[in-house]
Amino acid sequence: MSMDEGYGPTWDSDDEYDNFIRKMNPPRIVIDNDSCNDATIVRVDSANEYGILLEVIQVLIDLNLVISKAYITSDGGWFMDVFNITDKEGQKLKDKATIARIEDYICKSLGADSRYIPSRRRSVDVAASTDHNVIELTGTDRPGLLSEVSAVLASLKCNVVSAEIWTHNTRAAAVMRVTDEDTGLAVTDADRLERIKERLSYLLRGGNLSRGAAMAVSSGSSTTHTERRLHQMMLDDGDHEQLRRHLPNQSQRPNVTVSNWNDKDYSVVTIRCKDRAKLLFDTVCTLTDLHYVVFHANIDAKDNQAYQEFYVRHVNGSPMNTEAERLRVIQCLEAAIERRVSEGVKLELCTNDKVGLLSEVTRIFRENSLTVTRAEVSTRGRMAVNTFYVRDSAGEAVDQKTIESIRQAIGQNIQVKGQPEPSGPSQKKDSPTWFLFANLFRPRSLYSFGLFMR
Image 1: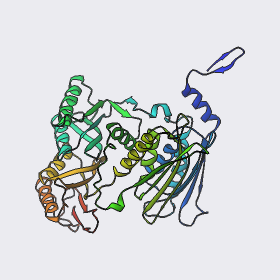
Image 2 (image 1 turned 180 degrees about the vertical axis):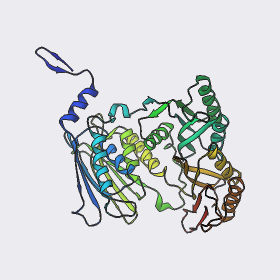
Image 3 (image 1 turned 45 degrees about the horizontal axis):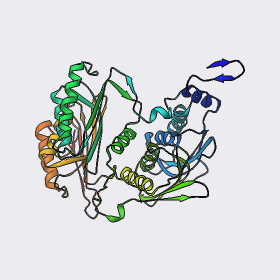
Image 4 (image 1 turned 30 degrees about the horizontal axis):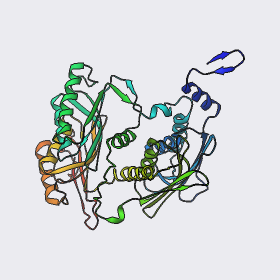
């Protein structure tokens, strides 16, 4: 900041001014566990900024909390929000440590020293890091794509330490964090990084010349939330265009409408759909990345159904003025809602991590004619904790015979036993622990079974 005589303070940058405003108006968080019988109430008051609603929701979602109701208002320069939250079991929060973390994380996220700067959140910033490389991929989805990508990375001596992969409307997007197989750190050699880009770019292009592929490799970590980044990537890739309706049950389709409240110059976005985890994050994320500001909102989730009503304006202050703009918002919200709707079998695996594990497991899926529709891959200490959503590559339901084939293949390769064994002196303490759970999420055809090895 500098002082010009007669003109008062001037600011070197908008970011410095934003920090000053936040310091003068720190967020206030009140957590009320007494007023409501079936939920903990979180009230947030703060100076209003573009994207602040998404920031608060992101904190709550990252703490594995469920938002059952919300009331939002942000007219003028002040943001006031009320959330009814529960844990994943639908119970009020009782753990004092979790309650303390809510207040702490929201204050840090919205405070003057936070990384949250709206202008930067519209793109990905990469900070220098020696721990890992971030690989971002978008391209045409096809059976076995994740297996092929994993095999290429393994052949280039890259170990996948975490990854999140989404597919929707024939498109695929992934954010993967990899390390060098030998050093366990980021790949820094420029020639080797270029080889990774060339191999993966060639793989992603496939035989479809009408739709492009994109990828980026960086030696660092993005400041953008991974799931938000996936929404941005798929939005930019146009997965909302010519939306294919593949949901087997017509009632599962989201109902999104947009109308204008002309007296107040608001556009009213109304969403009715089946409730699921992180739904509010997905819709608010999309509105924010489409550059709309939420001035008021009413959110309610009950009996497995969700109702969301947003009063919005574009960042330029105008409501949606054309039918084309309204149609695009509807299509983008429908896509955001459907990206996490996972039909098929859910497989959860946990074992000692090793180089090439993702390539090995996805190869088994591909050899059994299964395609991965969504995946979450993580490493916790020395353990790999992975979740895959898979379906038959021909579009048919995955049957128990196929799952048994997978079990046999895993058993041959990584010594998975068919049934849990009682612990005893003869059990090897160093044996890996694997869990394979399968649930078929198809209407009128539900089954589940488990495979354990200790």
